[in-house]
Image (cartoon, rainbow, N blue to C red; front, top):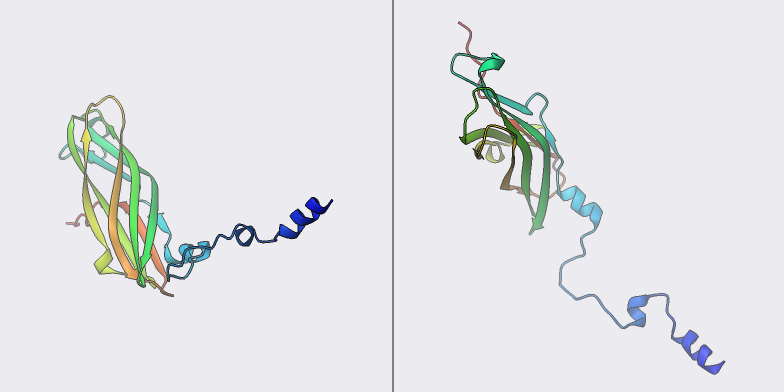
Length: 175
């Protein structure tokens, strides 16, 4: 009975105290999960920009002359926070399916990432990137992942939103 009482006396509500384990002192305040969500803005796929098609010259919208069709299936992001600056890495995943006029080779996909700060486009963090994808054969789909790091902004209360999609360039001029 005396042994059992000795064991009860050693118990503690805090396992770290009982084991004499203390977290390392890093000088940095502990980052909570809610803080991480606040520092990492959402990314969305812009409506109407998830598909990109290329046709033979002069054959716009003729399915028999489709060279390839690319689609975006998912977008995501990750963030790091250092010294009051949040840096975002964006990833866009999709696939390319060759059409009847498809051929092997490199296809450049115009992927546009837009950063909105308080609802306005941030030109320093908005660009179209030509992402090369190697088409090895014309029988099946080729998957790709585009990754871009370096979207940075001061951490804080600003409303930041990221938008991804294909950029088909300016609308054609009417004559």
